[in-house]
Length: 71
Image (cartoon, rainbow, N blue to C red; front, side, top):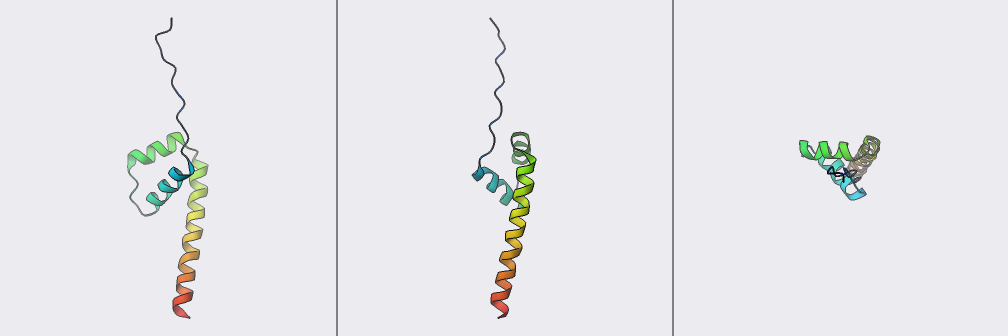
């Protein structure tokens, strides 16, 4: 009999968790604990792509607001 228990593979974060982490990091309130958890469980590529998408949407939103206000 083996006394060692097999280590379970960490569960990958879902889309909601990914978005929450990206938004928290974008406004600067991401904790070190959550950041470490994100990068040990999830793929860095998913966070990089999510960051680019968030940045593009943020710039587009600001440009639209400025366009509406200045017209």
